[in-house]
Image 1 (tube, rainbow, N blue to C red):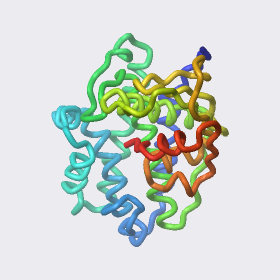
Image 2 (image 1 turned 90 degrees about the horizontal axis):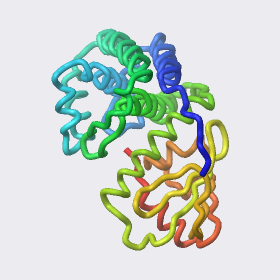
Image 3 (image 1 turned 180 degrees about the horizontal axis):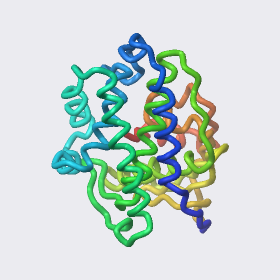
Image 4 (image 1 turned 90 degrees about the vertical axis):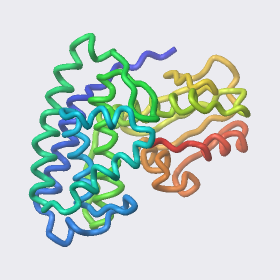
Length: 265
């Protein structure tokens, strides 16, 4: 087994927050109200989603989020409550409460509390440290790079190995829970996932949801190779995996079958 050093989630969140604030600092009225790539949401609504998610952690609505049976519907409801807000108010909420979440993430990361598991809607349970850091980084990363920037013709913000490691960490944790909750009866052997680029590596994914850094010791059915840059896009079904730079070694049909069920939210 390969033991990977844990990335700095708080530093990653701080960096992603800076990118959001940098982009939003000079958005025009037309850009704020432009349709984003997130279905049904304007650019302003996406930022409202990020801000409401941060704000909710410090209010009773956190319970609603944690106990939700449909996290996407819950997110839509929170955004709808802010749809009439002016952009300045949306940005102020995001700036204030994302700063508090970042500080909280840093404080919790050094305590045993970070390992306490709590449930997040239908996504399953996660350590608090992972929820405060990695979940937020993933949300920022995907919305900024795939839903906002390309929709208004802005340049995709840069990233780094630490941020990508945190994004991948969260995505594989969600995928693990999804497989545990809905096992793939046909999946008798594990697949390997190699992500190349910043923050990349090897992982083995078993039918029972076990995700292990490194290659499986048992015979693998398929070896999937993709890039870290594209992983968040196709694995969240913002793009078809068939349209991205993915290769499948071993049993090609088995690998395709696995890729067809990946849908990380």
